[in-house]
Length: 495
Image 1 (cartoon, rainbow, N blue to C red):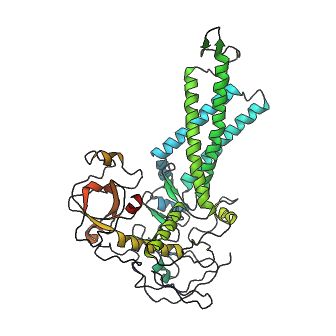
Image 2 (cartoon, rainbow, N blue to C red):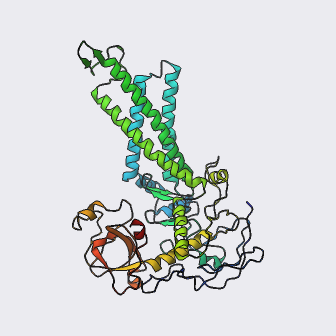
């Protein structure tokens, strides 16, 4: 890909990648919170005058070719999450860790659905279209079995191969580039472009899309193709199984119905027109087929919608997180009226090229998960700089609250009111326990719940951050906060 070259000299230093919490006492103006301290780089565009952005200028960054992997400080996981590095990334022996991934409600439910639909479909296929009598019956049974094998293969590939993790202690080759990256205190490394820290996996995941509870793992750089193929094959297999369920129930009921002068009689004990009974089909078998039909149709709709969502982000070379970052970038630019134009850097402009970055004949995605080709006018750190802008903006627009009631951190608190109990956020994000007098910086909120970060003594708590949801009725806004007229981010959208 041909990309332009952007170069400039730094005129300001980047804030610390993990600056202290904003206290909420600075006034908020209608311009970007950090625009006063920084200037944008001057792009080489026919001598055009550089425009001001709320971020420091970039050091010389070459946009042609791919950058190196960066270096690792100390031991720790590998960039691809394989071999001994993968064992270190998973925090223990590989076999034990992989077995423990199955001991979660997500994989157990998913595998149970696959087992019920597959086993019932094979039994019904033997009843409806016996595979040993005709070529059509044999093809039908082989295709049904093939769906099950391919679905399970891609499911376990997505679960056990994993997304790939940023090496522990990773830093970019050029030390000056650290100012454009966020620092992860848990992994003791910088977050590579397109990577994010997963609280469930406790690692920084390369090209993280989301953490999927159904595979009890993250969907990211290495397993994005396997996960999407699973989403594609599961509805197809369920559609085939649904057809078999419907035809089996129809033929079996037809063979057991007898018509009289004034009544219709259904005898589920034996077939009237087909004396050969290979597999008994009674009332329990009919109920099992009906249950499996509902399960297959529900899976087709739910998983099919997830497949459509994944294909949309793949064809634009984005992840679900990056789509949300792009949406927030537009909101930030509109809020502060900066006149910026955010261009997503990794969309090549060709859906086929975007598709090939994820799906390859070898099954190994393109690149190394740390460096990515970018489009004209962008560079490796266009997205990470936008993330740092949003992070600083979130601190400025956050609102300080004080806890007036104790909260234990349970998911559905019974003592906080009926509305709070029934409107608990449907997310795997944690809840934070509150004690009376605790201070919290709220960044977003719902009608009866809020999300924020508890203000802790960093020295006493070792720099650990406590973030999560808590009931709105347990807190009150601090009166001395000068940002009391600023709604919580997201709250104004819900009005």
